[in-house]
Length: 339
Length: 245
Image 1 (cartoon, each protein chain N blue to C red):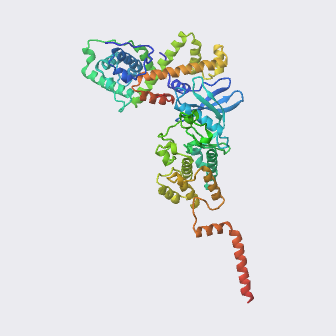
Image 2 (image 1 turned 30 degrees about the vertical axis):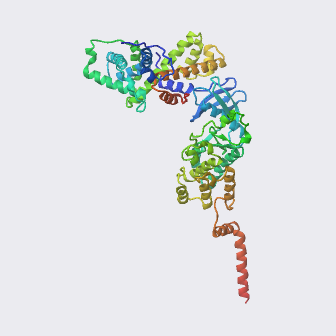
Image 3 (image 1 turned 90 degrees about the vertical axis):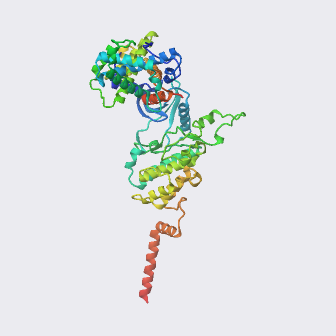
């Protein structure tokens, strides 16, 4: 019997799962990565002469839960045309019956790799706002991501920020889906939307909302993504995922080296509130509050004291106030000398 | 007492190996042992030669006697999936068996060598030359790697036989040139030129061969792992694939 070298065994392990794509359309080049749900390969689109990424499910047979999730992910992505979300070019069924979809090949690095390059709060917020904007767009379309974390964010070579891995995303809203039939059984769309049944824990520890931790996937709404965004911002500011207890998270933010401003800390803490009702209702509200913070205006997350309001007002009109004060001092001095 | 040892074993049932070796049906049990012996004899032989430093004859005897004794004395039925992987359990059983055998010098008492299985020991012995630099520091890793090597080699042999029987030898030839003995500049185009095929024929043949390879390996894997859960875990580790529940 032929003795196979370690090199050949490694090669066979890799190529045995390569997708069988129509060779006149796509030629697979190399694997890019493999996650819990699917594997992504770089391929060449022979017709359009461009590099693309192809995702297939990690399942040995077609029609399983992973295959359904991959199909759902392709459909979710197809609904979300936004600069912060990878566009889908094509989708279909492989010769072995498994689903695949083709998307833009992004050259860049994950947020984990990119974070050390972000110097200062302004740079961090610039990237974070684009993540939050992409999620806000999805929320406006009735879609929640449910697994936001640093490895699911890609920063491209030209600074573009992309939110990836919508495999466990959930489509909300009865208006978007066909009504159930009279028997009350779920429509195919319902089944797709709930590919992961209630009771299954969806998300990543450290970045998932408490309601996701409890395995209550059915009640996890946009506020669950808001929690994950807060955890992401906490991680970008502090370098670690937030502790489970809110007061510990607040304390960590308040005592960190180069600690963020009080209003920014309040924004993060509001995102991390244990109860969904205490958070921003959706990512759009978070984006708006961040914009207010960046403009130096009061934020919804923080009720300011009269002194803080006065200080903020002074800060905003400092030049004008100083000029008026200087004018008044000069007038007073002049009047005194005239006496 | 012997049991059939097939050249290309495929699980004939969806029942796990553990269920089958515990079966009251003698034929089912014998077939399950045949699958296990086919999957583990070669790594066991190499393990005995390199780790235990047995002579070729002593290692052959020990492998034959180990599987025969395991069958007769119901060793493997005692496996507890909660405690270890089946592969590790077999290796530990083999260690104990050899220790006992060396102590009691049973081989001599048996009055000579026993041949129960039709196994190609000379071929396994020839492989040892290529294993001169084998790392024995992690015995579990060594046994695992040799089990996978044996699994893939048997799958490749089965694939060749099946494709030749179907009159599709060219499919195996493409697989061989591209994946098994790749030249440094191997590409779809160079393989196409070498075999007088078009590039799309090469990719189609290669896809077909790889799919058969994957499916056959997973079927084989099921035949040498104790439980469905262990099969799923091994498939995940080997190919990153999730087997259906």
